[in-house]
Length: 479
Image (cartoon, rainbow, N blue to C red; front, side):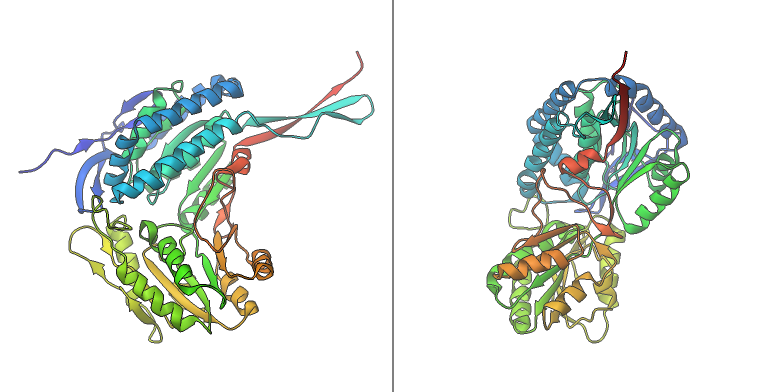
């Protein structure tokens, strides 16, 4: 007996709508591999409608005071807390993540980030007004850029939606947001929450696939396109946006080096690194999945890491003992399996290296050692629960190996030597350097990378600034 699937809908101009042509796609729970909902497969007519709604709402929202925008965002943050269990349920169904960890590790940061940007709305910065030319006063206006086309990923659908809409709306912009086609449920619920607070058209959600995202980015209305996703997707967005010189904000892939020196407490380092590498099934651009260990402690570290991996559980969302859930979709499972299947002969699988169960998309915590710098699994983003380990001989080689990839999002250094940590933080070519920790983020500090990890910042006042434009105003002092 078939179960009727729940129907998710677009949110455009303050109304929930089906796709104009009625097309839908099934949404699958990755923990079970079974469909639980349908979502619109939006086309050009839907994107046109959403952009028109956002453009119509923009002048009114732009002209609100920072205090008014702050109050709206604070109401949204309160609503997120009040409806936390609904958000958790939607996100768990989206992703298969552990329910308890979603409650403790995602809801509080999201609420805090919304409240941070509520405050940032009232902290517009620019050069002080002054007479830089005799008889004339100059000052700077900081203004919203306009309509923002935003594309969120499937690894943190709920939190990345917050990272997109909160700074944009705080700055006075209006938004058209597209969730991943595999994880639309929590974003549609977020639209309901925001719709109860914001004027119609300020926040719009369009569900769909890669083609829907392309239509959004190439649409003439948005002044800015923002995406969190793969390098390939980011390059495509940048190319499309260049045709009419849209602003582009890109947070793309990562291959974070985790540099472990010989003076560490190996057990303590392994505990922190294994959690930061396997959390969310390693589906995190900053995940601690590329470990570089000094040769003198390499063997001890690998043995301890393999033991830690064997003790970590993956499983269903309601199992309180699991650290992470499934990979997001069958294509991602196939990608992770492919990396392990293609390992060179000199590589050694120290733990895991296989799928778990025959239902859903679970993969065992995996450790691979014996690798060389030019191996595929070192150079390319796996985006799964796989930690690689290499050895290095000295600080210079550690830096060479760490920087020797095309990504530059995040990194960490593990050492008791303060001077060494400071040298490494200077030499590592990554947007974030953690010291004796890996993966914590705070709303006040920027998140974003260099090289093929993209450009622009999320979180912090820098992330807020990215959603503004700067205008010089000069006035004569004469009558």
